[in-house]
Length: 95
Image (cartoon, rainbow, N blue to C red; front, side, top):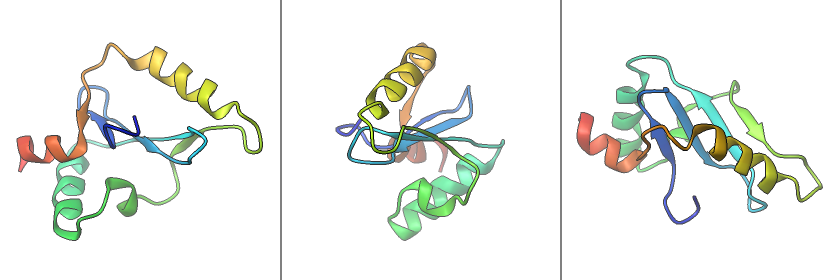
């Protein structure tokens, strides 16, 4: 994911991004229409979507251990069949 950037699945309404250098992921459920708002705001401010989201996401990590990668892999295994977009590419589709 580090090479791709932040990812969003419009069908699942899930936004995921790298949370730490150890491989932890932050995962947010995005309510309907919020994806367009996040796309617009992030494009204007040249920021990632996470900069506009407060508390409420889930972190796939175990602090102080190397398990972050394991939790991230579990997330990917659970959701890999969904269609995912880099959030910058998604903005091009909806704006």
